[in-house]
Length: 210
Image (cartoon, rainbow, N blue to C red; front, side):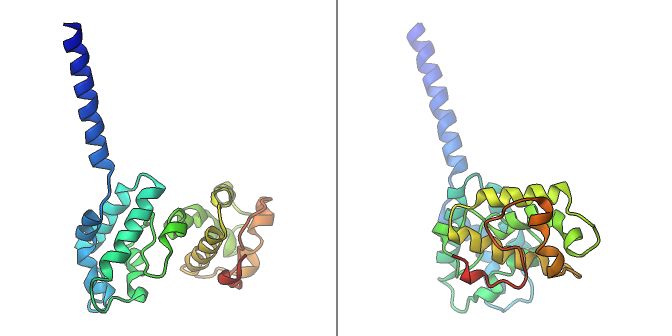
């Protein structure tokens, strides 16, 4: 009886484990299916991504549970779209913004998935969103949320590539808002009393960071 009980416990535990493994696994097959509808926009044939494209991208974002998931999606996206003639990075990289989705992985042909998937523009946008009112001169000091977000970005830096990614994403992100001025933006680290490891400025060339 005791042996039967332990056998049942083991079987249930094993099935539970398998269920979680299968749920957590992200494959290129899954990414291909979710991203297939984005090809017509990525090639410039459509002027905006389809609802199916945006929905697929949203589902991929929700499936991310780890940095490895981000890297897998990044690699699969790059490999998948390159099977189609005419895909251009200038269109592909615009899909998240066109879909109005904050993705947690890079959507680009030019990205190095092994070094840059850990930090994405979606993450940077979320962390820096509260800084906009100071960067436009509306607030006289950065909010606690702004300083906290900047501190978290600083702590997430593990490499020069991370610094470049944050720099590029910050520049691209704040330029979506009217009235952002570099004289305010560049003062945020000092105003927050934070030593950042990346430039906070519109005038910097992110590719020169070492």
